[in-house]
Length: 153
Image 1 (cartoon, rainbow, N blue to C red):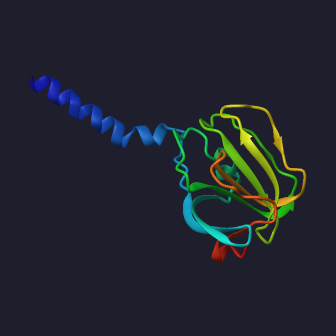
Image 2: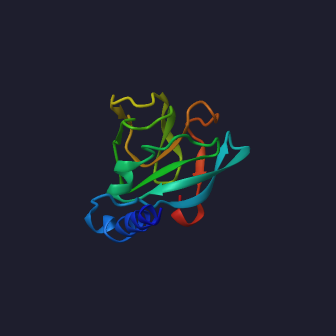
Image 3: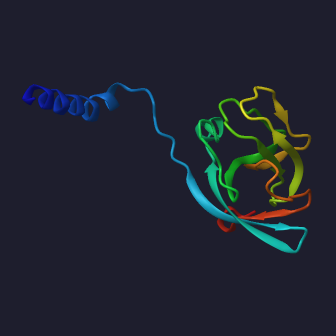
């Protein structure tokens, strides 16, 4: 009994103190912001969005998450407008992708991107921001506008 307890303590010690030093895996931490979308110039809907504003965060995106709640998602941010490319590798749920211009206006939409698909999704127009939300959950259309305060959208 005492030997099992010693093994257990030794195991925890090894995990806590040595494993992080030899692990290549880094936890990616996303800032969460609250934004609103003005839909059809009338209704406003609030969203809780994780911000992907570095290459590492944009590459990881929503991968490996088990689910997404109706008013949450991810906002991808770049410093300039370009045609954007996405895929759904290791993303466990369908998504709608909204491509936004530098003012935060929806300029292109890709509906119902299939979970786990490695098919490429291309924007037709240059975009500075991309908003990912759960598929078929919001009636967002071209021309609707995202407002996130400090992001100057």
